[in-house]
Amino acid sequence: MKKVVKFGGSSLASAEQFKKVGEIIRQDSSRRYVVPSAPGKRFPNDIKVTDMLYDCYETAVSGEEFADKLEKIEERYQEIIDGLKLDFSLEKDFAVISENFKKGAGKDYAASRGEYLNGKVMAAYLGIPFVDAAEVVRFDEDGSFNDAVTDELLAGRLADLERAVIPGFYGAKEDGTVVTFSRGGSDITGSLVALAVHADLYENWTDVSGFLIADPRIVRNSKSIEIITYKELRELSYMGASVLHEDAIFPVRKVGIPINIRNTNAPEDKGTLIVESTCRKSKYTITGIAGTDGFAAITVEKAMMNSEIGFCRKVLQVFEENNVSIEHMPSGIDTMTIFVHKNEFEEKEQKILADITKAVNPDHIELESDLALIAIVGRGMKSTRGTAGRIFSALAHAHINVKMIDQGSSELNIIVGVRHEDFKNAIRALYEIFVLTQL
Ligand code: ASP
Image (cartoon, rainbow, N blue to C red; front, top):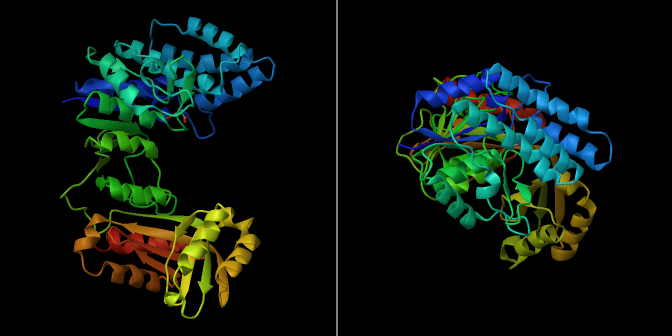
């Protein structure tokens, strides 16, 4: 059994957190490859080391004195090193970083030092080799990630290493220029390492016990999801549920390595297991509920629209030409409705309306803003009768008017549109009917 374990910033924010991580790794000898993030927040208003680095580098390139800011960052690491009683120093590394900042080594280089240094501390703490991600995660000349070369480099380098620490979030071009993934990108590194070493499991340790059935800011004490498929996850992430970087899924998914989201602060919790497919039924008919606010709907009406060939295409083309992405598209016989993100649409509104009029000469165009979409997602819906009935009766009992209904053809989700002011109550009503009152 071989596991890759990635620890997020809050799991590594202090010496106390490092100790929990050490305990988790020592408990299971198959946890062989460790991917750390940079130290995150220790308390709600704290600043992540990554953000401190971006800020410090900006000061450096503007020609101002940045030594104080860099010293503050060094103190964050020193606190961890002292708390762990390690006989280890990052002094030389900080001297190199300071020089490179003066030379303008780049924003990505600056941010990457958070993971680089934390990886070094982690390797010293665990007593296992450190592998610099710049040597094994490859970006092309144009800055795009090169998966094939990365896989070859990582697999080659880790083949002889029984255990190793590989810092997350960054890699480098062939000439050594450091490049980072987007924020939260250590999740991707973990996934790449899991792929390269043919891990049996990719454990992603964070500060929550996996995905929750509903957003905890809306549903207090929401239960967590034990097992979820990639497809379900995609539906929920689209609606804003986020725990994992989206690009972390692809590398492990293609070879069938499951991801287990775990909580460093509650290691006894099983967390959420993400798999390609499973015959394990979820405890409830639904797997999760997620929603997003801030949609606008444009309904285009024209008598006999159904027989006018090319009508839909012409309307859609207007959105394409105005560079506005379409999120949903429910339709009737003589109407088609386009859901878009309100903030994307607003500034182009008048132009789009004029273009639609020009393109299809509709009888009427109706606009509605301040809409929210809620996705009720679950692989169990396919084989359960009455799911839609329960959704609508729950919403009706909560006095919520449903503005739109869309059931994906895979029967994996049902999306309902509601008014902004009903958004939270709708989610609560759905949680109640599927999780609290009916198993
Ligand atoms: N440290 C980086 C960030 O704050 C990357 C990561 O934590 O995954 O986004």
